Length: 456
Image 1 (cartoon, rainbow, N blue to C red):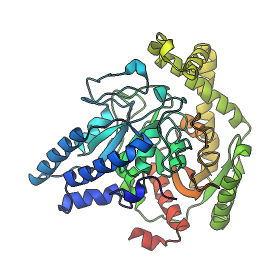
Image 2: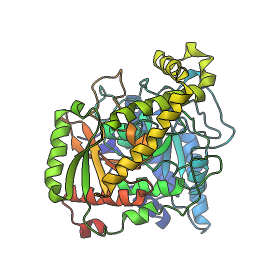
Image 3: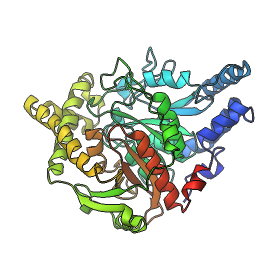
Image 4: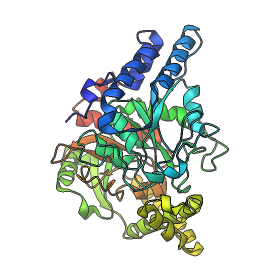
């Protein structure tokens, strides 16, 4: 099934890595690429509604400057000329950042978020701001799912997922506190990647739950999530979750030959009984294909309690971070008001006890990782619900966000209605390159491509 607009997209089937190389060689100019994409946005945006802010003149102004820079002969950045869309909770100078709420209507940040500064330094084109749900929470946004307009695109990074799925932009940035990257990627049929917690700084991005908020990436090609995350990663003194360390070299590691054939674990998460029959069938078929390379395992019963702990932390931190919005509750949806009220009732002792669960989860998962390279699980219960009043359930994603493990969803399954379904791959903390390398191997294996051909 082809996403609306994708078949006519000027970047259909073309990765950002390829586009970057063509621009660097002079075979394509940034202006040409951006004009084609702007035309595509004009044709598809009325149906999809992916953008909270988009200005063709602003895009082409950047494109002209980047083409002029290339003619100077100076070194080009790793993203030179590549359009990147940003979730509308990421601060941008000269561009509104309204956080999905009328309370912040017209808000103009005085400085860029750290990741925006890094994108610009790498030569990226800031292509526009994508729609987010209200305050990056669960209230559905107006964005449509390009694969089926009556189906939810997910949340809260709905616009970013939809923009990539419809071929409006090669790369879009989102964030995840529960399942806001992995779930929309699954529903919209794109790759979605949530790095290890702390790999990418969040300075200048709306904070909802600092213990879990994580910047993530959407793209139609696995190479592209590695390419852009290499640019975004690194320590920032404004974000205590980051720490000094070597560059992750994700794109380089991803293309290394796997040293041994990977071993996978299929875990049975809490609420696994709610997974749809098509998803169960697809996962079973994959297990059969992998044969001796995969084993199935349950999780301790305590993981069900950890789900409650994750919610406790999220609600308590949300009440603190969104305190200023609470003074204007008449402008908030009932769902946000309810979450703030629940968060305000969390006792300090319960919050601190809930935080302790993170270490317990990591320790339990480390035991599984001693036996496998990557954990496999459904990215969602099934295909995107045919229900515009919901963003879907993040139950399949929340534990990994709470624990801080890196996760990538790959668009390899299809539901009964022809809608995409994603396979979620979870890696060991800090081993993002290994996770993406294994994901690349698995995609090639599923496609029936040998490792040698994949290297070519």
